[in-house]
Image 1: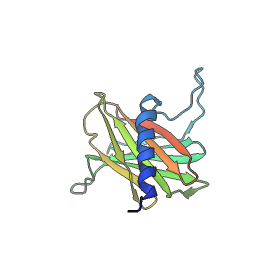
Image 2: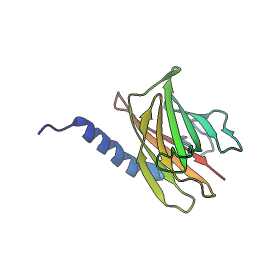
Image 3: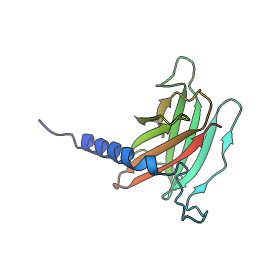
Image 4: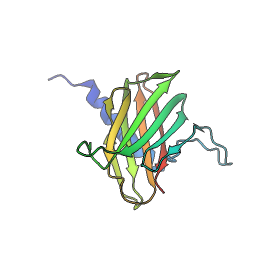
Length: 155
């Protein structure tokens, strides 16, 4: 029986995600302890209809974090769609393995593998309850590099 190398890659990414992200800052920045951040965050849009979009620079990649209510009848695992797009030089990078993690306001955590949908990656989460959710990602690029970051969603 042949071993699928993709299974080992995914397992490695999941393990790294499970160990690394709980201690990571949700902002995805690399603070130096003096209030300085080595991450750049673009304008954030949060509208009354629940749409949310934040663009951040993570290790030279432009990462868009998008959260929106799931369309009625089209929920993919939760009340909201957590969508992520990774770009470099203005071009979408889709040859990735990506996991997502949400820590809910009460402290409970969920980890889901993101599925590819065109230029975006997506996972569904129940985010309809009030409070601030820590939304995190870990992605592995084709060159073997691992990159992590995140944002906060909600109040």
